[in-house]
Amino acid sequence: MKIKIVIFIIMIIAGAFSGQYAYKIALASKPPITWIDINFIFVGSIIAMLYVIGLQVLRRKSKYGQWAIYFSSFIVANIISSGLAAVVFAGKITPARVLFLAIGGGSIIGILIAWRFYTYRHLNKAGQIEE
Image (cartoon, rainbow, N blue to C red; front, side, top):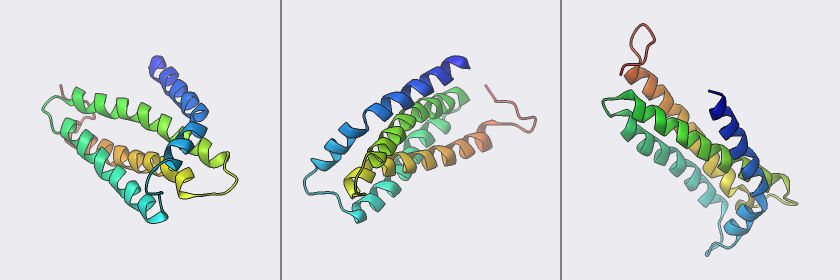
């Protein structure tokens, strides 16, 4: 359990240091990102996480869904901290600065919905995970 927390903290720190580079990547997009695109990306991130993790949750063994949720949460922690760093260092809030925050926010909502689906599918009445 402790190794998961250490990895989670490392991913958050790495994301915080990559915030300025994330902004440069988002700024380089052609055509430029608009606020309508941010809404579409946010909703698309929710749907993408539900699809990717949902396929693993639907498998017979519960460990695949659990692994997908764990690994995705590490990646999303990096994306959210990168997006927060880009917004914090921003002089002005623009769609390019909010891009990675929208991706991470939508992804975390998708993971939470997938986790709820996982607990519904794989936990029996006693609260134990089925193998």
